[in-house]
Each structure stands twice: as structure tokens, then as C-alpha cells.
Amino acid sequence: MPVNEFDLVVRSRRAVVPEGEKALAVAVRDGRIAGLSGYDAPLDARETVDLADVALLPGLVDTHVHVNEPGRTHWEGFASATRAAAAGGVTTIVDMPLNSLPPTTTVSALEIKKKAAEGQCHVDVGFWGGAIPANADDLEPLFAAGVFGVKCFLSPSGVDEFPALDPGQLVEVLHRLAAIDGLLIVHAEDPGTLTDPLGPTYPEFLDSRTQDAELRAVERVIDAAATTGARAHIVHISAGSCVEPLRRAQQAGVRITAETCPHYLTLSAEEVSSPAFKCCPPIRESANRDTLWHGLATGVLMGVVSDHSPCPADLKGLTAHDYSSAWGGIASLQLGLPIIWTEAQPRGYGLADVAKWMSAGPAALVGLSTKGAIAIGNDADLVAFDPTAEFTVNATKLHHKNPVTPYDGRRLTGVVQTTWLRGQAVQGTPFGQFLLPQNRP
Image (cartoon, rainbow, N blue to C red; front, side, top):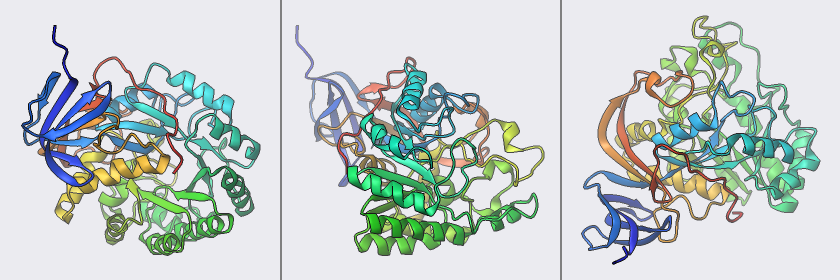
């Protein structure tokens, strides 16, 4: 009986590879990409999928997801979060160390989280550890246990069990991480510049968290990274004023990178209509977005990740309409790809740019050398994406556990048709794996 040479072949006239879009047949064997051939090449496979003009993208890598399990699983959990990820073309997530209970600040807490996630994951999952004032001696063991890096806050995190580092503690942590070439990721807002909102409205909330608060904190991290030689990464840049100092630091050889998020690139303060839009740092004025897009285009910002941070509707204060007390976080894990494509296309960017920002960049940040690109030898993490189809977001139809998102009712371009994880379509029984860094950048 003849044996098929490949397990799967996916053909597309718009396959997105690092060099751009090409008409290709992508051949998969044993979960890896085993060959790239011409679109019409005769290939023997157990299953062949012809997408025609539907695009084939590498699976997205989202390195900024708050799954919240265990402890706050009614906010989100591994089953719902990873199902939403797969529906949105995301094949790898890296889970944040808060808002789960316990937070992932010790090896024992990491093991508790892995036990909670076991058997529930529809996509591959990695984990961040946490750096807080009391756990400096836990950092090296966390890296040895397989975290991709550790996260800290420079201002209050919003949960008491994850306190912020002061300037001296920031330097101490970076010194320790420099010795093991570990990555520190930083929520950068200066606590001395933040103020309490003067009232319940969004303009008053926005005034309490200015661009200057973000800029001062970013400059502090740049200085500390330069002094210690450690690797630092700024999460969720919202302030365009941070792009130029980051560029200068990178050109000077400081080991610092930064990301931004779909909500900062596509939403604006002028259109905020409910606390579903509240996040920290906040969504800023529309003029600010152009600077962030320029930061992406020039490589100062290495990628776009969701910062998916959901909560139940009552914590969002949708009835009270009070931005000062509502939980700050945007739910968008399932929507990131069409959100960015909807905004990127009229700005003149292509699918190859989107794949670089949402797949290759985040994969490189965390050292996943077999993720992030359609290339021979890589995991066959693939997404069939129709870049011309349109849909209207209905929050109640998303896989997120709570139907709260600022994108509800928004018209978006681009529909995910199928997501393959290591060559197998994601549907039904979860088969995602826990990930370890494959190489330290």
C-alpha cells in the first residue's frame, strides 16, 4: 500500500513568507513544514487544502495574554482563552504572571498554574514569571523552570498580590537578570506622575495618566538597562512620545525592545463611549496613533500583541459609567488579526507586515525559533485568512468568557477560516503543548 509523502499540503496564491507573498504549496510532515513548492506542484499528501486566493499566514504569536486561571477563572480561563486565540489565528500565547492566584512569582506557583492549564489548551502556551519586591531569590529558579522572562510593574498593578518595584529594586532585578541573560518585561508608568482622576469621565481618567508618566518610566528603564547590560522590554506602549527615546537607546546599543497593542493603533480617546475602552496606560488621542504606526514601520516597536485582560461585566462598571473605578483591561484576543488588518491596509501596509508584527516579532522576543514564519523546519502553525471578507463584531459570539469588548458592533475586514497547530486543524479536543524557550535571543 503506498504511503503518502506528506501529512498535509496547503496551497495558496497568497502564502505569506518572510520575503513577502508568494503562490506556494506548503507541505507538512510530522507537525513541521517539510517543503515549500510552487502553487501547482504535484505533491502526494494524505490531505490537501487549496485556499486559492485566500491568504495563508504563519500562526500568530501573542506574548501578552492574561488568562487569569487559577484564582480568577470567572474572568477568563485556559479553555476559553486558547479557544478564542485559535479562532483568531493565534497558535501560541504566553501567559502573564498576574491576575491569577497565586501570581507566578515562584516555581511552586508556576507548577500550580501548569496543573490548572493541563489538558485545556487549544494552542501552545508559554509562561512569564513575575518580579516583585520580595522574590529576587526566586528569579533564577523561575528561569530554570522554563519561564520566558519575568514581568514587573513600576506603578501599582491593580492587584495587591503583585506590588510594583521601586527604582532601586528595578536596578537590582536587572543586575540579577544580566548574570543569566534573562529578559525583564516592564509595565512602564511613573507612579510619581500618575494622579487620581478628578471625576468619573474618560477625559478625567486620561488626564490622570499622561504621556509624560509613560515617558519618564521608559527613560528610567532605558537608563537601568544601559547601566546593567540586561535585556529589558517595555510592554504595551501607548504614548507616541516614547518612540524616539527608544530609537535612540536601541541605536546606542542598549538592549531594549518594546511592543504596542491593537487598541492603541486603532482606537482613539475621541471615540471612547464606555468603560469597555478603559485600560492602563490609556487609549490616547487620534493624532498619537500615527507615531505608533511609524514606530512599527521603522522597527522601534518590534510587534503587536493583545494585552488581553478581560473581566466580568460588573467590574467594568458598564452601568455606572465610572472610568475611575472600572477595571482597566481590553478583551481582544480573538480579534487582533482583523483589527490590525482593517487599519493597516488603508495605511499602505501588507499582510507580510502584519505577519512580521504579530508573528515573527513576538516569536523572536521570547526565543521561539520554530514559530513565527512559514519556513522549512518550523512548526506547521498556519492560518487561512480571507483578507477581503468583512464581519461585524458581536461580543456574545466570541469565545472570550465575558462578552465585554470595545470592538462590539465594529465592522472589521479579514476573516480567519482555519487555524492549524503543528499541521492539525484546531477544532474540538485541545492538543496544545506547554512551551519552553528554544533559544535565548
